Image 1 (spheres, one colour):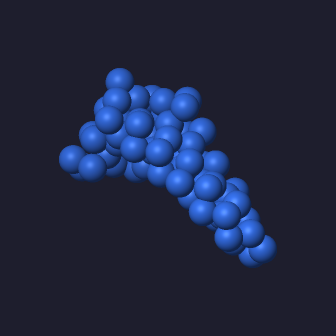
Image 2 (cartoon, rainbow, N blue to C red):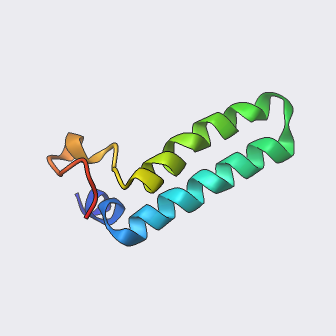
Amino acid sequence: MEFVKFMSSGSGRLARVVAGAILIGIGIALGGGWLVLSVIGLVPLFAGVANVCLLAPLMGQPFKGR
């Protein structure tokens, strides 16, 4: 529950954007089959940019961040 509250905060939003960017960078740097990692990295990146937490509704928290 605390994890979801953190991810809904501004710091959690920044963490999602950074994590997504890192996954995208690693996928591009390694190339080949690792490009799938770049596609997966788009999910937390766009979730952070849109200020939504995809796990929050599962824990009874609001979908939209603070």
